[in-house]
Image 1 (cartoon, helix red, strand yellow):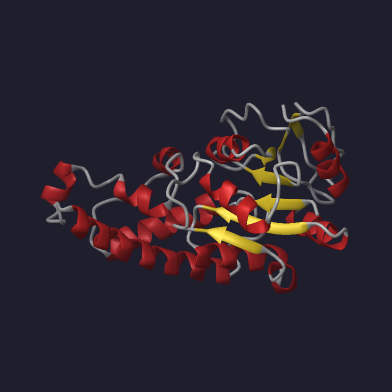
Image 2 (image 1 turned 60 degrees about the vertical axis):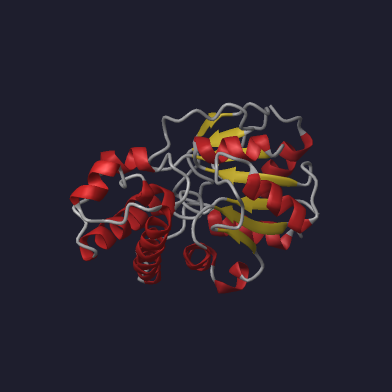
Length: 258
């Protein structure tokens, strides 16, 4: 059966600016680490796949020495694991508070895909508890329960490597012509394309100027009544209306990959 595979952050909800960034900064503050990422700082950090990897980017030799942090590989691994566990807890609390509503069209498209007999999945480099929290708030618990979730450190290489999508295809028993990905970033788009998958991009707060070469369709969002989708590029020749529909996804699956 055809399957929709969603990224999480920036796709299910615009989580980076309102969720991950404040959670990182609160974690640094609680740990006494003299780091506070601005919006512009984080626009660069989101190009790094994975939360622990983003945190690891501050561990330069000079920073480690100045702040009395472990300099050995094992010590830094344990440090990052502790930081990331706390950051995930803070982020999950933000999601539970309702601070991160689903993006336009997500619940509508998921409900329609489920009714049409499509499979549903999420493939993300974020921690699984974070992904499940966002998913449940974006589409509701009943629809969330129908998703296969592939998340976190379950593959050797994070996006833009295709590993997470290749794993999802393998676990779901799908070929590349059976699934279509919804992404929001150039890293995610490259991962999906390199896995051989057709990709629809819904640009998010930090990704509007990124390169989405190879995507079948690029839109501002999937659209909801009163919040129409804007078509930005349609390399596969499928032109949705103000609401991207399951029929649009089906049509893209029938077209060659750009």
